[in-house]
Image (cartoon, rainbow, N blue to C red):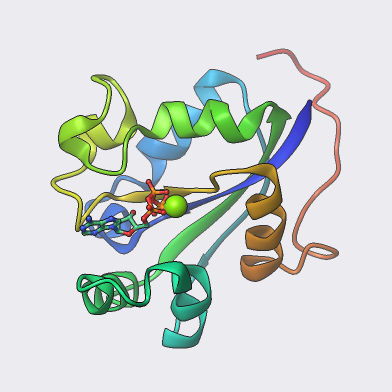
Length: 147
Ligand code: ATP
Ligand code: MG
């Protein structure tokens, strides 16, 4: 099924000049980018986005990590994109991430795991609305040149 999903390149990905390399992984795979922007996240947005972790001892670390600098938000539309991208991203803890996945290759530890990807189509819809104005910042187009 064609799905839209949200990816965030977290502040450490931006700091480490990995924006192009990580987006390149998705483009090389053939996935279709339908939205892209750099933005600063405020506490309110992080509280919404990671609110389900608010009672965890590591929550304050998440807030300071995610607000340390700009992130890059990416919207992708493709067949089964949610599961496909979660696979390319790898496990939450980079130590457990499949070799060759983005977190295995680039991320230092669970506190600095470099990238976020929506975990279900339902979450993706909520998250795309959270980070994009979906009527003006997401693009419906056909790719007319083959990869
Ligand atoms: P994300 O939502 O960022 O894509 P995820 O879906 O793999 O990651 P979640 O369970 O949604 O994992 O956790 C959200 C984020 O909270 C993780 O990316 C990580 O930064 C942080 N986190 C989760 N579990 C832990 C933990 N046990 N210790 C420290 N940080 C954690
Ligand atoms: Mg998650």
